[in-house]
Amino acid sequence: MKRVKDMVAEANDMVAHAPAADYLEQHGTEGVTFVDLRDPRELEREGMIPGAFHCPRGMLEFWIDPESPYAKEKFQSGDSFVFYCASGWRSALSARIAQEMGLENVSHIDDGFSGWKKAGGPVGEKPSKHK
Image 1 (cartoon, rainbow, N blue to C red):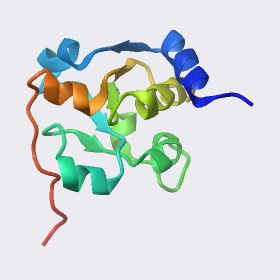
Image 2: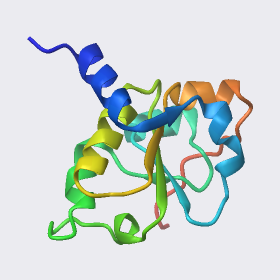
Image 3: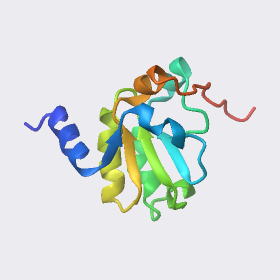
Image 4: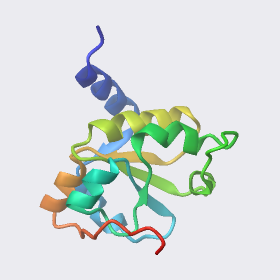
């Protein structure tokens, strides 16, 4: 059986990644999109990086593929994408998949949202749905 930790290690060998502290200065930069892969309950409980694009992990492939009925224009924008999750495992796998699907300039925060908070990165509330 292939183990998740081995899959994450393989992904990290294939995609750019760094600790959250290295990504702080990219926050708010035009052409850089932070992608939050966490479950909506995690966002409600812990908040998220302000301005991040929320893409639940289970929808990633469907949202990236321009031929999918669920495709999101954000992934066709040509931006650089910085994926993150809670601790860097889901984001490693997601960044690898995104890269394999043809997205360029993909990386991930290898210590996740927890690392972002430890590094003093800004945290905001999950944006509410239209009222």
